[in-house]
Every structure is written in C-alpha cells, then in structure tokens.
Image 1 (cartoon, rainbow, N blue to C red):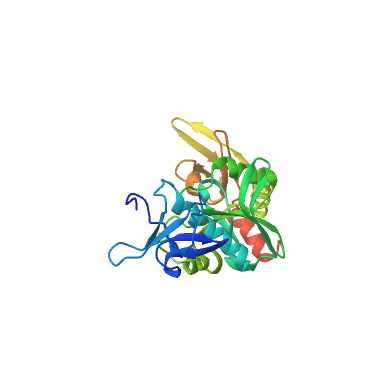
Image 2 (tube, rainbow, N blue to C red):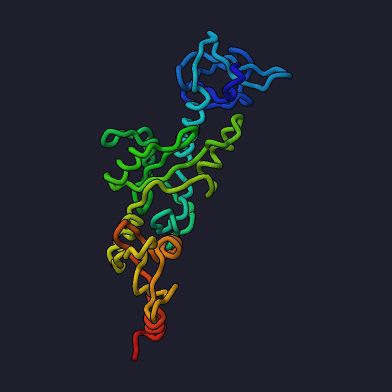
Amino acid sequence: MNLSTPPLTIGRRRGLLLHIDEVASGLACDCECVKCGESLVAKKGRVVQHHFSHAGDSDCPGAWETALHVAGKNALLRRKVTYLPPLSLSFRADKVSLSLAPARAVLLKSVRLEVPLSGVVIDAIAETPDERLGIEIRVTHAVETNKVDRLQRLGLSAFEIDLSDIDRIASLEQVDKIVCSTSDRRHWLFHVSTAVETYNAIQKATRRPIILRELSRHVDRCPLEHWKYEGSPYANVNMHCMNCQNALEITDETVQCNAINNSQQADLFSGGDT
C-alpha cells in the first residue's frame, strides 16, 4: 500500500461495489479495481489498516478516488432519493438577500449516470417530480468553472455533493447516508430560478450614478440617508454601498440599488394610502 495516498477500501465484484470489511481475505475476495479492472487482493491483517491492493502490484494512481466517486453516484442510482441544498437569492460577493427554499428531501423518478451534454459529462442527471437536475459528486476537485458556465448556458439546475473530507475508509453505508440522507455537504452550482430572480431584481433596481468627489466615490440621494450634506442624503460607495444588501450590483460608474426610503416604507406598510 502506498502510504502517501488513502487506502483502497472499495472494490467491485460482478458489478456490485463492496467494502473491504464485507469480503474474504486474499484473492478469495473475488474483487476487481473500479478504475482499472485488475484483480484485487484483500489484505486484512491485525496490524495494517484493512485495504485492497492490486494482485499484480501495479501502480493505479487515483484508484481510491475513482472508487469513492463511483460509490457516490451509485448511491443515487440505487436509492433514488437525495437532499436539495437550501436555495437563496444572492448578488455580488454572495451576499444573501432572500431565502427561496430550505434544504429538503426529494424523490428521484429516474437517475442517469455519466451523461454527456454539449461537450461536458455530468456525473448524474436526475428527474424529480418538479424538475430535471444535474448532480456532481466531488471527491478531490471542485467542479470546473467551464462546466458551471456550460450548465448555465444549458439552463440545467445543478448542485454538488462534497465528499472531499469524508473518512477515506468510510463504509458504503456512510457514503449512502451522506449522498442520499443528509442535507449538509452540498451547494448549488447553478439554479434557473435564482438566475431569473437575480436578473429581474437588478433590472427593477434604481440605477444610481457614482460621483467622484476628491478621492471618494459617492452616490447622491441615498434612500438610507447614511450621510447628509446641506440637507441632501448621500452614501460613500466604499464605506456604505459595498456593505449594503440593497446594493445589488456595483460597477465603476453606477450602483443598482433597491433600497427604499422611510416614506416609501411607510407607504408599503399602509398599503400606499395617503
């Protein structure tokens, strides 16, 4: 066993994944490597951590990573249930503005693995009663930016389940639980509804020009009236807007702001009556 990498504890027998603790010792385990297909030897002594090694002592880098990745995908395929991450509307710097939906369990009507779509391969595509979802299983590397961009262009909502810090000798039951029965270790890569809501919110916000005064950038007529000069409210972009949930988008020239002033708030609570 190469001590620089985690031990290989998942093998495959006639298509079925098995943990090292479930098989007989030696070649009697009748297992093969999930990555390269070579026969495995189950080493189950009293001193060294139980693990599989390749029968021919061949070097198969990443075998444990591939086995864990396959175990995560197969859990979805077998169980056909998982948890969706909480869904929030967020803007620049991931400032959460509005919670759209909490984490929730969802039944999967169907699951397809390793689906090629427009030049990328999605770990799993699942059909729920309400939508089609892409699901990525992370073991070492997060989903690449170009894949996320492709998901957005395809309009495919997708989330990632993170197994990167799981115990490397975890049982298949533990992998199943994380993938299918818990609401943590997951986040949205892209969701159609948040993209639409974010776009609509920015379009509805007020475009406020940024004015350079000496060495400071200001926005005049700030509805929140952070500062005033001769009775006119304004905000300092760096001090106020950058930390304001109402500043949905900030460019070099403008702030897209959805803040309302005190009189507008009063109208909202009163139903707009005067």
